[in-house]
Image (cartoon, rainbow, N blue to C red; front, side, top):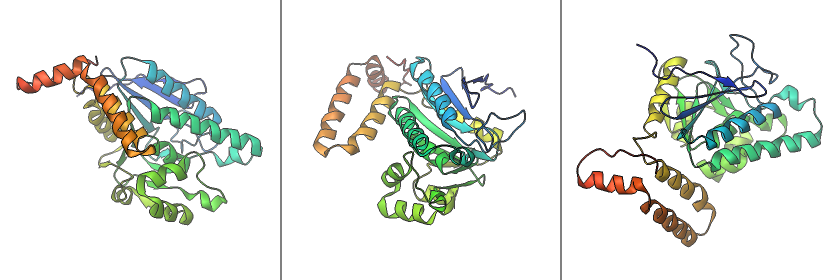
Length: 287
């Protein structure tokens, strides 16, 4: 059977990230680099480590997806079957100045915040190991799906004498709680995807080889595309969940009311309510 998600990738400027959009509006962002953070040679598997240049490519891809009105879901994954990403290139970090390292972390923080704040749902599909900065990228996504028995997750920066400095300490603490996050990072332990699911760090685990996993992830993401879901409502739910916990509860309730009020004025809310009353499937348009 033909693959309904036949993807035609274009390479971002530094050739470290591949980008494609499915016919139903899923933007696929694929990390692709060797251990030094250089572009992969043909048939390379990579550990998909990142450098400043890859972060620039990720930034370009995220902004491209943001501004494409036909895109409703963003899906991150890694090239090959072994790694989502092994994190920042240690070779790169060993060759640059402390000032460069600081600005490298700052730009990575800005890039992942942009990903986190986009109104479109972001799903990270862990096709293989996600360690160090690879897990930091994954934690900036809204939902994480992993391939069964395909790899480990962890923030082992303690073994290098540093910390997870591109959002790792902040996001992990918010995702799994202070005590567990602290232990996880000071031990530097690597966990199975199943353990990650038990810690609420991974949402779902899918079986299958790398190709089947990607197809299954695209199938799963498709439930959030038009006409299946009211994408404005998805975006407003995301905004409330992202912003609300950082402000006082009564302010969160006020934000929620404003977001709801804007949805009540949308065509999709009228369609959703009418479809419920008429006992039919809603046909959302994104308006």
